[in-house]
Amino acid sequence: MLTKKEKSVVLVQGVVKGSLFDLLKKRKTTDIVVLEGRPNLEAARQSTKDLAKRKLIPTLIADNMAGVLFYKNLVKEVWLSYQLTDENGALCDIGGLILAVLGKRHNIPVYIYPSGRKSKLLGVSGDILKFNGTRVAPAGVEGYVPLVEWVPQKYITKTYE
Image (cartoon, rainbow, N blue to C red):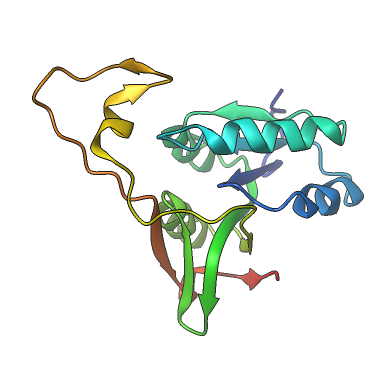
């Protein structure tokens, strides 16, 4: 459960290699928040399982709730999974850019960590029209499903390899 302490929360976004959680455990990090990872919720499933194996129990939130944590001044640091990186930035799971921009705006470090899996660039329209297997949009509605996005270097505090 989240504590009420200012700047106590570590946000983890995307499917990262499990070694990140070893690092967080070694640092005695306790307030870990995992973003669900729409559209397929893979980040929620994989990250929460990897954390539980290490006896670290995270708080799971909907992707769009991260902004509230920044607004309430609860975020201490952000960890984004990346597919590839160069001197210009990193290709991160979708949602990484907004977290990086919020981190910069709130003077919170944004770290990038290798992804635990390779992602396609785009998902299929049907992926976003359903939530956990149940259709949530009416027939005829189309979806746009980018799965990765570029995060410019100016938003990244440190790259881990």
